[in-house]
Length: 386
Ligand code: NDP
Ligand code: MG
Image (cartoon, rainbow, N blue to C red; front, side):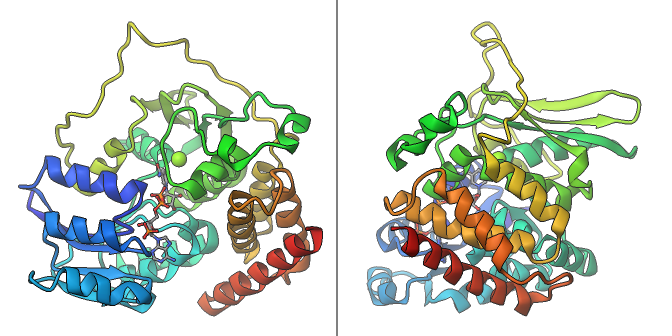
């Protein structure tokens, strides 16, 4: 494998820092060529001093001089602002872009990277939730690979290696999150602190809340639809609390292929970065003698209406998933800040879906506008209920 120069969008986050651990394991094969952060200047500076990238971006422009001064003794270009994200992805030496930003903010830099014909290691699933049709069409047009980082999608991708036969069904596993066994009544008064304690995965705050509401699994259904070109009614969510079976594919002869492993995001991150090669790693292995029973349950759409809403949005198509994503970003943050109840999140999203005008075949401008209008509507709805 030739050395790959990676641009990590969101290097200070959960996925970004784990990607840097992968690079540390294989410094002969990977180079952190660009690192970017939202506002965590301190960590970005430490990462830059350790990994010596060619360029760094701090999206929060008020932190620009802090970063520039801290790195002034080093040959590192320092940029600020979200426009800069769209420029660094296209730098000539970059071989791959890992999109580990959170939320809608990943859309425009990802599109810029695809237009610059950079292979994408995709962690930022919201990009496909919001504009999966546009993004996958652009990848086909520019012949750009979209390599999944999300553990379930990596498992599906791995199950499809060497297969040319059609997919009958995708089995998308879900841990069920911290409230898997809670009744709706129990969930009414849960706090952000409770929701932030995920049983199996240590992730960023936004996706951890999405996992608790199962919105995350709904988004993953949409993500799988676009990545693997399979309709949502052939994507079956199965709750598997141990998170050992990362997902599976069923073929037309009834055979099912799954990928298993210890829950550790560095494995799918590394595979996306090294594909088609598998590299050795020191990450934890399954201990078969110590393994608990593997169990499987039907998801309860009544207790987890966000999952149902994602299916509904993808059935509606057009800008509907973009509405759900934008409303969810607003309620997710409001819940973390104690301004929105756990069950109220689904109500606000549902109300936004009813209110925002449907656009059947949106272009990029429509997505930007839908995102803006939905955020305003969701904020208004939360304010009214306070
Ligand atoms: P984190 O919140 O931990 O990290 C997000 C990163 O993006 C940080 O570097 C953050 O910078 C940066 N960022 C946030 N907002 C902006 C913005 N507006 N402009 C520029 N940069 C921004 O998230 P995760 O790493 O958990 O998740 C990243 C993506 O990967 C998400 O889409 C998530 O769904 C997906 N994913 C994550 C998994 C996980 O295990 N964490 C598993 C599967 C998918 P700063 O630190 O300065 O705020
Ligand atoms: Mg996942």
